[in-house]
Each structure stands twice: as structure tokens, then as C-alpha cells.
Image 1 (cartoon, rainbow, N blue to C red):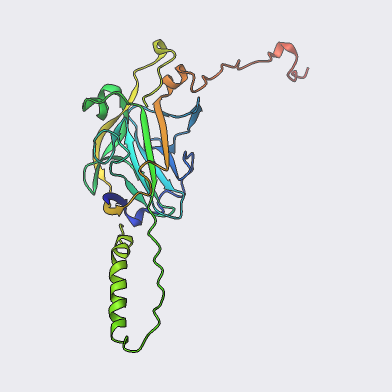
Image 2 (image 1 turned 180 degrees about the vertical axis):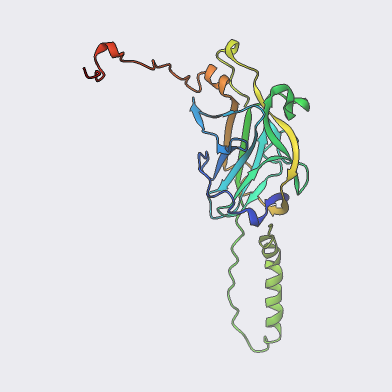
Length: 274
């Protein structure tokens, strides 16, 4: 059983009142612009989800567990795990979210109480590019796992027989000993590469995610045994600048409208009195 990062219980309800444009079934995933103080709208295009990032703005990945049981979220940005800094992989460490719990991932984890802020930046300045891994810049991935359920233990009381009174406590102790590991385990608590541009000549440089200022973000370790070796759900959100998403046809460009579609000479407006 691997040690995972658990979100502190005091943060459990901190994001529930925010507006939602979340993607995901087991858990909602939002991208929140910390400078503009808003959840970025999600654009759906050819089966993919996109958000438009503003270069220089810090952001956070907001997770909200929709389940009445714990889930594990293994999160990567630009093909890099946000906790370990290693290449993204489903088997990496993740964040354990309690039932209905929410948490905002604000940065690359440096320790149990510090992160380096996520911010939108030009591809060469991205953490992935600066560590020699630029191939998957522009992709945020969240792999969600359910916890493996504890085996049910059925206890059938033994009918006492003559001479068994002294042995009954020992049998009970043995049963407790057999159930002990499962009980102890359950009691652990803890507070694709972006698509090719369709109109590259009209695009600005692609966005990536930088390794920014250090700030406080407190978590603890927790034990979590996954129910399956593969994710129960995998959520992918692609991002780039607004200009690039317009150039690629993902966001519709605004349509120019004449400020005076019906000139006064046409007689459509009320005339002045004589």
C-alpha cells in the first residue's frame, strides 16, 4: 500500500461555494484563474475540453469529490506529476480527498507545507520545457481512483460447551487478532499531446505552466489502497491562449456588428418635432 498525500480536513469545505464549470463524474475538476478571480469556462471541441489561459496569471486546479467515499486524484500538468515532478504516470502519488471534499492544487509540491505556484507562461519558460520534457505542454490530466473496500468480517458466536469457559476469551482474542490488520488499515486517517494547430501562422507561442513563487499549502500523508490498477475515470483538460484557441477554431471569433444597422435616414427612428 502506497503512501499518498491527503488534504487537510480543515480545507474540506473551502471551495464549495464557488461557481462551477467543473468537468468530471467521480470528481469535478475546474481551472481557476487566481488573478481574475474566476473559474475559466470550458470549451468542448471534437470530444476534448479546453480552457483559455492568460499569460502571466497564476491558476489552481480545483478538485471536488462528488462521492460519499474517499477518492485518490493523481494530477499532472504538461506531462509532469504535480507532486513528484516525475513523468506523468497513473501509479504516481496523488491527493486523497474525503467524501464531498474540495481542494485547490496551487502549485508543484515542494514539501508537505510548500508549493511552487502554477502560472500560464510561454512554452520555453514552462517547468516541463525547463526540465527537458516539452512534448506534452498544454495538457492537465487527473486520474481518479476509488479506494479498495475493506473485506467484510462475519462473526458467528460460538455456543459454549462444558469446560470451554476458559477458552472463550482466547478464541475471541484470536478473532480480534485476525481482524486486526484490516481494522488498523481502515483506521488510518489523514487530516496527449495538444492537437496540431490548424492555422499556425495566426497563432502566438503555445502556453505552458511555469514553476513560480513558493507559498504555503499544507497536506499530510495517508494510506490508500486502490480498488483497481487503472483509473476509474481519467479527465483531460487542454489549455492555450485565447488567441490560439480562436485560430484553431476551438473558440469562435467575435462577429463584427455595425453600431448603426438602421440609419436615421431610413425613417426607422422617431423624427424630431417641427
